[in-house]
Every structure is written in structure tokens, then in C-alpha cells.
Image 1: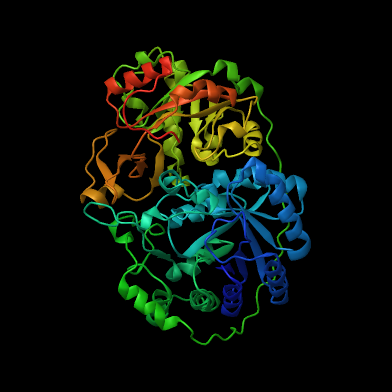
Image 2: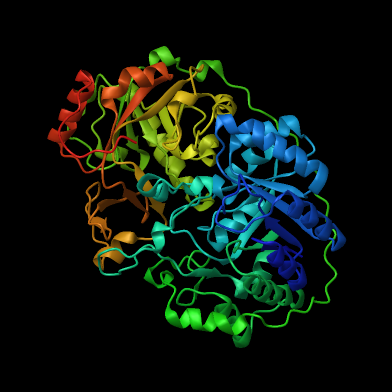
Length: 585
């Protein structure tokens, strides 16, 4: 039977999870966890939590699921040393690949679970993470039933699925909106939840998803072989934790779907205009969206302070051995040296110019793989790099392979990779790591070097000064509107009321309460990309960035006309600061 995993944002919530019948609980300390706003646990409480979980035969999972700065590694390793000796958790939930590498080197006996922040949607990514020492992968919330089944069957690693609680509209680990507009990083546990705010348009809350509820599908997930079923809610009250855990416990034990009364109890515990199972059932439409109404808040009061009696349940006894980390060995013939990659990268995510020859002096020209057919690349084949989709489910892999074969047949030999799950598809290409890989520290960069990347796009949230020189080329955003969100849902339809569009053109804007306008473009499939309201401009800081080891500056074109693109390239060549409104981040 699948394990039931419950959240604990406080010690009272931990007791509620245990009373409700959780097999596992996950919680965070006072640092390095993605719910900085929860009460969390100090060192004494962590020791007590470890003791309590052992007494009740409950697995204790500790969250270390934020990106780590280089200067923080000493502190996080001291913290884990304390946890290993004094708390003895079952496993650690980790986002940062550099941290995973450091933990496996220092604590080879530690069991690692890959956080959903690592953005894994496909079995190829699961296989790779298993090689890196992860025993379990927390799957992306956007996965449908068939995607989950394929991952479980083909990845060879344990799987964990979110079955209840809040949904991020952006792919987890890929959201930069809170960080860029509010200086509160979701990848650092400080998300300000801009997705819950009102915006102008047909739907005044176009980014706010209802909470997830897969209670009717637990038996189905269990039969697939999913290892753990996860309830979200470390920011929620103990009453919520008990109510939701106890309902899911009974459903699992009795192998049945919920009654109307049980669904109502879940809704009363917490909901946003009800629930959705849209991702799981591939019903990704406006019905998935909702907000926290006054009616919902009144209903929540009905489950507060209700008596909690420990469920008569004998928890499953499971053992999970730590896996060794097998680091990849880079293939030197597949590498370009940093000296061969100096200058700028012309990247087209909006309009693709009819004539690309004005960009012939670029070190690289990045074009989305699914739009390569729109471009005339004759004579520039050696410059072109196809950008793989940020999200690729197993069911889409065949299509991606065909597009890569067509690109290769045209003479394209470079590929820009935003997700590790796509690495096995591009063995014949020179590789360039894209910014969604979240290269936030030198340890992550060192690990990725082994996968034969010729360049790595540093995380837009990182400080290039912290990196220094490397055997591979470092890339940073020099100009352009940074993509803040990548969504599986159609935000354009929410804003405009329909989703008519012209390929490569801005066909909707998200306008917030200050009047700032965030362009929305179509990605591959029906996915959307929401871009910053202002373009970043750092082309006049080329020398400073070069001293930090950044030899490539990306010019990211989204809403610009071809004339405007030309002026930006000219500004790059002259290290000039043109007129207009920009952000320097």
C-alpha cells in the first residue's frame, strides 16, 4: 500500500498528522526550507520531533528544499550534521543539485528525496536523479494520470505524488515572479504569492488555482505503484492537517472513494471555491481556477477545535536504503571551450526575424525547437541551438525526437537544455544549460559540468560575482524580459476570454493593480509564458560581468520589432545604455 505523507508546519501539526494516521511527515527547521513563513521547528523541537516519530513508527522527512548560496554551504552542512546525530530523520527533501552533491559526499548514508522544485515530469529525469543518489522523486503537480503511470513504470525510482492541497500555477521551481517583482524568492522559501492577487481582465484572478484533491483516485494511484501520497499544507493549522490526513487514511485503508460527507469535510478544512483534479484528468481549463471566498472561510470554522482521537492504525514498516551518487564523466569531444563562446547569444522567444544574418556575429542563436521551421537558418546552421521545451512528459517524447531529427538533418548541432529529463534525447548535440536548471552556486555548476554542457546559463536569482572562472562558459541575461512563469494552463484565455493567438506574437498581457503589464506568449503546446513587465538591461556592464567569468550575454527577444532587435544588438556592440525603462536585475 502507498505511504501517506502529511505536512507539519508546527509541533501541534506534527501531533495532528500522527493522530490522523500519517505514515510519514515532512517538516522544516528554521532555515533552508521552502516554507519560511511556517512556524517551523527549532533545534530542540527537531529533537523532540525525531523522538516522537520513532515512538510512533513514522518516517520523518526534513525539508532542505531551497537553493543554496555558496557562502551558506558550511552552515547547511553543520545543520545536517546536527540532524544526523540528534534527530535521525528518515530522509531529506532537496531541491539544489549542488547541495545534493555536497550531502552525498559528506553524509553518504543520507537518504535523499528530489523535491518537486526540481521540476521532474518524465521518467528520463527520474533515472538521472537515481544515478545522482536520489531514492525518491516528488513528481511535478502538472502530471496527468498517464504521465504518473509512465514515470512509475519506467523510471526505476520511488515516486511521490501530491494528492491534496494548494497548486502553484507555475511549474514548481520555475517561478521567478515573486523574486523579480517583489524580491522574495519562491526558490528561497519566501514566495509572496503574486498568483493569488487580482489582475485586470475577464477573470480578475487569472492565476489563482483551486486546491488539488485526488481523494477519488487513491486506489488508482496505489495500484499504479506510487510510493507515497502527499498532502500539502505546512502553512495550515493542525485542524486542517488532522481533518485531511484522517480522511485520506480511511480511504486508503478501506480502498474506496470518498463519501459526500468526507468530501465536504475536506472542503471545510480548506478550499478555494472547491477543488480540482484538472491536471490528473487532463481537464486543464478555466474550471481549475478559484479563490478563497468568504463562504470558504466560514466553512473552515466548522472543523476548528473538533476532538481528535488517534486512529487505530498500525503503520507500515518500510526501509529505504541510501543510494550512492554516481557522478557523470564529461565527454571532451562534445565540448566547446569558453574561448570559443564569447560575445552574445541572440535568443528568439517572440517574433523570429525573416532575416537572421544581422545576428551572424552572435556566438549562438537560440530558437525554440517547436518553431525552428519558421526560421531561415541557411548559412547559419553552425550558430543555431534549438531550445528544448521546459516541460516534456513521456507521452510527448516521440514528438520531441522527431523535431530533433529534423533539426539535425538541417545541420543544427547545438541544443539548449532547460530540464535534465531531456538529456538522453540530445546525445548527438553540443549542450548548453538553460536558466531553468537553477545554477545558483558553484557546486551545481561543477556537477553539471560532468554532463558535457559547453555553457551554463546562471540562475537569474544568482550573483555572477560568486562564481568565478570555470572550464565551461557562463551565460547571463544581458537584455530582455525575463520569463517569470511557465504555465500548463492557458492564462491568455483567463485574461481575454478566449485563446486566439498568432504564433510568436504577444497576444495578451497580465496587468496588475499598479498598472504594470506583463506580456504573455504561447509556449509549445497550449502552455503559456508570462514575462517581466520591464526588460533587464546589463549590456553596459559587460566588463564587470566578464571579470566574474560570464563570457556570454543573452539578448532575449520577446515583444520587440525587428528594428528594435537591431538597435539592441547595436547597443551591445557599443556597450551603450539606450533610452527607455529597464530593470538592472
